[in-house]
Length: 452
Image 1: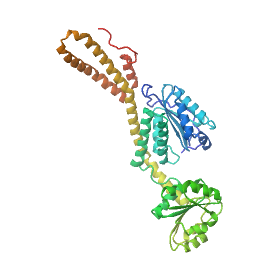
Image 2: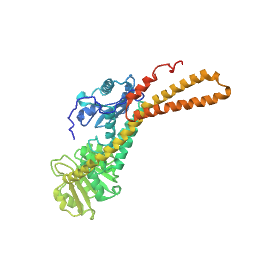
Image 3: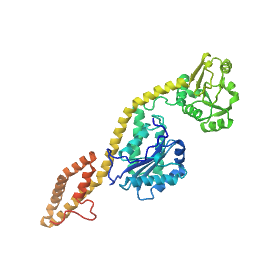
């Protein structure tokens, strides 16, 4: 995976891709930054949520260039998806960059931190995000909920319309299919999640179990959140700094306990996960032996995900204690990652199907006005000519004349309409525009047909 400090140039993706004409749909454009294009301090400054996100959405629609807008902002990405009202993709992109600068004025980003995608490339990117293929942790599932929240916020601000609504519904379906039809989300690919999964595998239903997390840093917090997510019955947090233990306990619904009281709590809990930055062993084999003498034969699962280790390796020799260190978990993580990587081709196939379906809908959206306008053009001409000729027919023949001319128009239009649909199916928008020119469908106020 590319490192976070790799900074690609802002660039316009050129076709080989399909880029719909402006017409009813208009170009789709994405300007964004993620964990590959920008370091964390830049991403933090560009994060927009709550009122800031609402203000950006509202501001984005005030100008003439943007028709619809969705803003995604997470710890790893800030992305603006726009359906433009102009064919000038570069101008639309500049408008989005300006929008980000105005609403994240303290973000120290430049163009090297950004990527610009449009047309099929923008659609493909969103589908990959929804499926977890663009995440820091391959196949992670949280992003799908974040996409739903971002789209809901846009809809609430009346910033998302027919095109982006359809695009994001396609992304939601693609993400769900990826996780139900493949194993892209199966198996832990982080040591914190692997620790929680291993504890659940050994102990069974965690709702009847208690756990102690030693360490209130990032890794300890992740372990605590994963245990909470798996329904742990009681969770204790111990940390060298009591204030940090209390703060984390409030965030995850746990109990803060003094680090000095570890010995007492070792005799109470079923699971210990240690993740501190201590340079020394925190729990010795003697500590565990004393705790086990008070446990009445109940097993104890101990998982050490600290580097250097927090738990004495000699603990492995104690009966009824299951000790696993970070090397054990890394082996499991690598197996799971390989399993997920093997699923990527299957996920890409799903995304291709969903992308094709979206562009089929989009092409029909482009085609519909032309089908309607051409049909109306022929109908106007038919009505004109029937009105001029009615006096030549008896009253009793008027209905027959109406039916005959309607049937004639229907037969005359059958092949042109079928050809138009075929052009749309192949993405041949140029021919559709030619039909509009040929029949004068964009000539304001001109009925067409003329006098005969």
